[in-house]
Image (cartoon, rainbow, N blue to C red; front, side, top):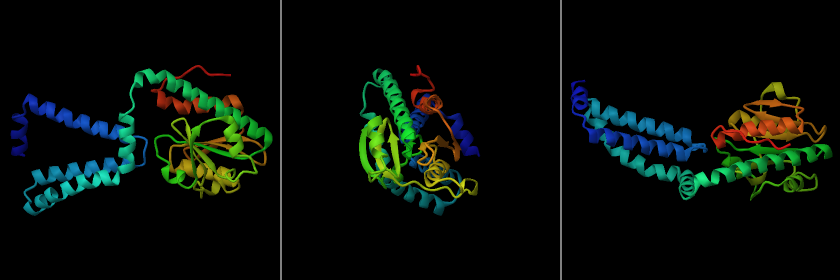
Length: 266
């Protein structure tokens, strides 16, 4: 305890700046990892490393201190290997320029996605063509994306109608949308085991199952009735008209725009 008090009494301005720089570095690390499934693992690893380091400095255990000092370099080397996909995505983010200038373009792109999905959903419902459209949010859905066919295409109503046409090979599974792009089609989703939804069809149970494991938003069109539903957080809202569907999608996309709304197109 006396060592801690001695350290606190001898803190200089340079030490405070040093601490702030380390804090900013960790903040940037978490910010760049945001939107992936690895963010929870990263937080846990950082917490464990910090606790282990503090324990090795404060506790009078030579063997434990030696073990921590030996293991820390190995952990630092393992981090880039474990988080290689996330680091690649983070570097891509850093390489993007003109974020302030692109804000208006992002809002326009979001409006376009909402309009295209709403138009496609309306047409699919009228034609009684089943559909399953997933919007990725903070939790990464890469493991489900890899079960489908990569597309990386713009969100267009005509493309969604083609994908979910009964005569196509991808119609009975899900489309995943990430960052205003259709990343993949024909994706396999986990089905809920909640007995409350046992009487629902496979599409609806898959939509609920995915939202039980992630914060995604899933739009479902029933093949039998043409009813449009939205699943989120393990629950489902049914019998949505076009305006209610637009409102839900707008609320969903607001987190990407800093909580700001935008003019709704009717």
